[in-house]
Length: 314
Image (cartoon, rainbow, N blue to C red):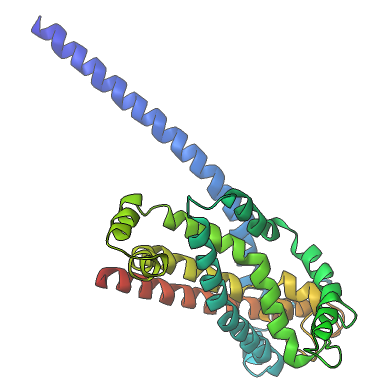
């Protein structure tokens, strides 16, 4: 009898090991698919960019000349590159606080279960996110133009004496891009904030209401401290995405006027593919992209370190 029990236990253990092996095999299979796709569409292009950055190559010929770090040395003395670099930083500094603040306020307002039609409002604010950036850019060129609705409305209220070419004026071009990007991307971060807000128990709000707190007091003293960890992640994503901006700038201004809105992505694109500066320089563009990519990684690591430090402190 005892031997039968032991044999049964061994069979059960063997079956469990087999089931575990099968489960692990399926897990590795699904992971392998993701890893293969990442290597093909992310890893391989990065390796190619590293190789190209060491070459003097237009991308149009079969021959390329090895130049070592010459592309990087030239990069450090290129005024247009540093102009694009500073414009990327300027754009990020302008848009990140706006996106975080506006999206958080919207999320807080739309998280109220008593608000009628909040699902409709959420959809309305998210629609710009799923709209193609090139379509948004083309439409906004008309809206922000000299003969566009924006100038017409401002002049109707006597806020302007004459029309302003918002996208053709160096002083107005960057703020205009920031406002348009804010409108388009705000819905993404609103969803992130909503996810964080929905993690706060209703009991917390009810207790605060019993204590006599209004919505503003609850927002400042309850909501902000509780979603601070989520806010750190959202801020990091917002900064990285802002540094990588390309489509809106390319569609609306192409880096103009007079390189006033030229960011790293448009600079790299122009160097690698555009004929307006002569022969394409794929090697030089790869060096610029890798250099700025390294900067973005460093910024991401610093922001993550700050977030971890604040989480431990809290």
